[in-house]
Every structure is written in C-alpha cells, then in structure tokens.
Length: 169
Image 1: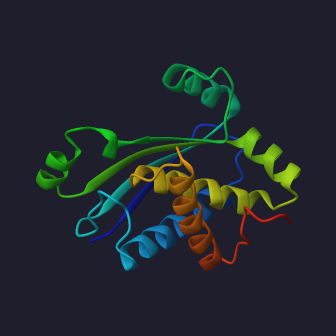
Image 2 (image 1 turned 90 degrees about the horizontal axis):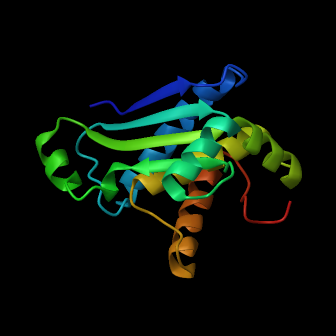
Image 3 (image 1 turned 90 degrees about the vertical axis):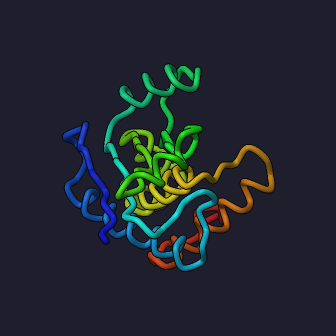
C-alpha cells in the first residue's frame, strides 16, 4: 500500500527542489494524521492520492474567481473530494482514496515568505500541509476550527523542523 502525490508543474519557474520537498511534506502529514487517527472522514486503510499543482498567480487568480468568487490570487487552493456527498460510497468501492487537488501560487508564496521573513521552502511546506488538511475535511470557518487546524499544522511542521508559522519570527 503506497500513498501517491502527483505533482504537476504548471509554472516552469518553480525550483525543482519543491517537487521533491512536497513528497516529504506529504508523507509526514499522512503519517501524523494516521498515527493520531485524525482526518475527520478519511480512512487510512487504503492508499491516499493527492494531486498537487505548482502553479502561479494568474492561474490561481482565475480559479479563485471562478470557484470562490474572489477576484484575486491566493496562496493555496484546495478542492476536496471529501466535500462531495458521494465521497464515502466512492471510497468504499475504490482501491485508493483520492482526496483531491491542491494548487499553490508561486508568486504569492514568495511574496508572503518575504513579508514574514521566513524561508520560501518553509512557507511552501506550511501551505501544502494546510491544503492536505483541507482535503481531509478540516476547515477554519470559525475560531474553534481554526484553532484545531492550526494546532495540527504546527505539530506536523515541527516534525519537519519548521518553526510555528503563527508565531512572530
């Protein structure tokens, strides 16, 4: 049983190291969720599949406007299959669990990392963990949800030797 991260490079300006780093972030995140039986509606008894697009502000801006009604780019978008009402039935019949798609905007990631005075690679890891948690059913629509999600992110990032992104650096 092998989990699978499908990395699609939509923007040729992404450094090659990010695709490799994504594999480690993906594996660490799933190991943590499985170990602590987290993930809301996710079962870990089948291989997990996630699609990651390393993209840019133009593409993310278009998707953000189309699907969220927000006319600007954002750092990360997640399209979770767990939100589909047929998800549980599809998982029951499938050999693997397709969680969904994550799209990260290179320019926004770089700008935010610079503003926060953190390494872009660390911000990338945080955005990917955040996106994976969304695919697993986590959200931050209210304070309790945000606190739970942020707590999990911090613990996973700690395992990757990345400082708490919610603390002032």
